[in-house]
Amino acid sequence: MIYKQVQQSTYLLDYAGQRFLVDPIMGGLEKGAAKEEIKFSDLLDVDAVIATHLTKGAFDGEARRLIPRGMKVFVQNEADADSLSMDGFSNLEILTETTEFCHLSIRKTPAFYKVNGISTMDQKGCGVLISHPVLNSAYLTGESSWYDGMKQVLKAWKPRLVVVSAGFSEDGEGSGAGGQFGMSREEIAAVHLSYPRAHIITTGCPDHTNSMVSRRELKQYVEQQRMESSVWFPKDGEEYRL
Image (cartoon, rainbow, N blue to C red; front, side, top):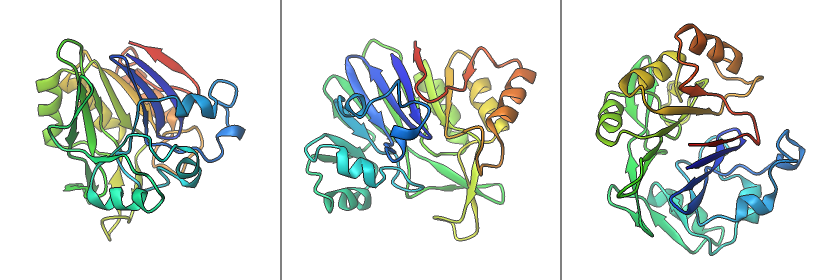
């Protein structure tokens, strides 16, 4: 299993011989810190794209322009499929709890956001559980905040890798009242406590951000809670082999 951070919430995941581009954001990549480590050709040399959501800049205009129209793209609902279809994408598949791809299972899992501390199903996003008959699974939570059912997913599938959106942001999109998307530092700790053997990789938390908590603050918290061996904060272009 190989994880490579691209930028923001975008990353590459090599799993059991298949390579996935997750939540592509390609605008500005040629000017970013990862420009020497990541080329557009790397991002397009994949077996499939996984879009856990199309909100907050994911699958931006540059991604829609550059990704081949015949590329396999997994989306989380019919509305997202229609959106990409209008841009000419023809090999779209809506994720379910029983989706199969090559020799892998790619299961859709719920995503939640919070309004005033109350968890609400996110109809515009999802998580993904990728599993193999022999290998350890990978759990991509998307933009989800923590919710009670996540504990059951972790205990049932025992993923070696969990990718979370960290440095949570508040956004009115989808809630009308302002909602928390992504995880707070305490919620990342809840993931760790639910399955301590998992490696947790955080995305979407640059050093300078409009998020409610910075990467620096998250790192300090992780160190205080003695989770630094399990919770990682990749820089753009950084790679992990698990």
